[in-house]
Length: 148
Image 1 (tube, rainbow, N blue to C red):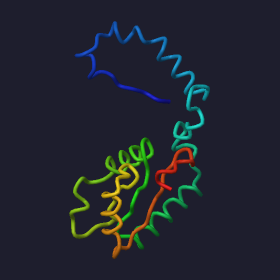
Image 2: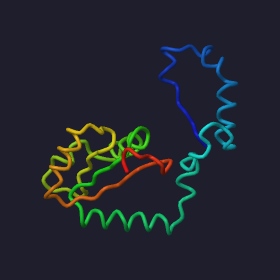
Image 3: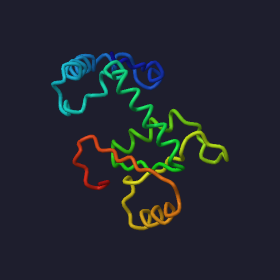
Image 4: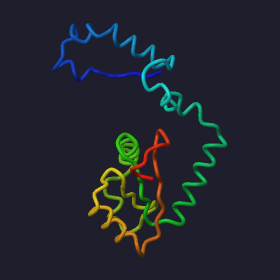
């Protein structure tokens, strides 16, 4: 079930204006829950975390441990929502200054794909030359060519 708390918006928007959207909200919620709306092929997140099996979670944890042991840096390559989603989760679960600390429990995360400028990519590849790093390529559709 998805819930939204709009209490803090009531100083800007009246309850009457919000109520005017009730039918649209219920229609959108119904389409989301039934998987009938636009973009319905990208709703895997809707049933998380209950749809993750213990085996899959164990595999994710084992992979994360391998990355921690072998990488000082992880390059997350994604564009658009793929980049923003990954960055939002990583930043919300991380200390803002971990990357500046001498002792790190996890690799430093840097991003590629959101900026496909030649200068940025040249600087990134130059920086990584003597580093132990891994790359995570994110594409919701599986057809993103910018980060491939």
